[in-house]
Amino acid sequence: MPHLLTLREQGWSIWPFDGSGRHTVIEIYPRVLTGPVAKSNAEARRQYLQRTKWNWKDVHLQAAGASEDAFDAAISALVMAEHAGTLRSLPLGAGTARREGEVWVP
Image (tube, rainbow, N blue to C red):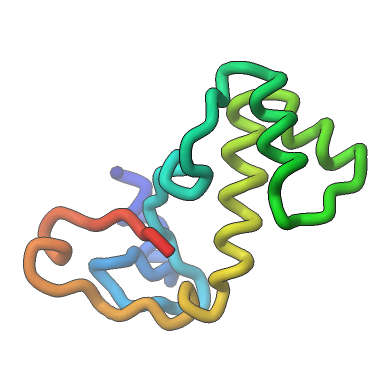
């Protein structure tokens, strides 16, 4: 949390406290972006990745399935890329979100 102030002072927008800017920090929960998957199981991660709509090169499939963190990062990046237009135009939060924050959900 203390780094958010530093980022804001350096010109970053912190959503939902600010609307989107050139650089915006948002909070996500990767589980919301993946849906149900036993991500602690390497085989379950591999099967999930193979069922997605994205065309994976073998090297990327292996890297994304290598660990829970790699899995979360890969899926999060792809989902966020799909919603880049929405992310570029996030509005300033209202009410409680302006005081407590909010998790971005596509």
